[in-house]
Image (tube, rainbow, N blue to C red):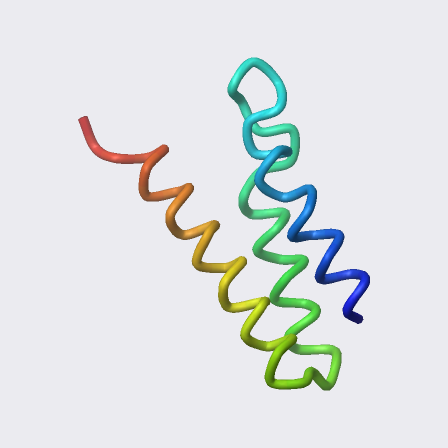
Length: 69
């Protein structure tokens, strides 16, 4: 599980703005992937904390990207 979480941590942010500033993979994809890990696997406290941090990164990305004008 550590490897899967590390992979998401490594590629999630770059994939959110990799194609002309547009997401290659949408935030919803990453959110579903992280939530699946949370629900399907027994995580250590460290792993659960890493997942929460990544979900927070997604929240921040969406808040910045989708601010009302």
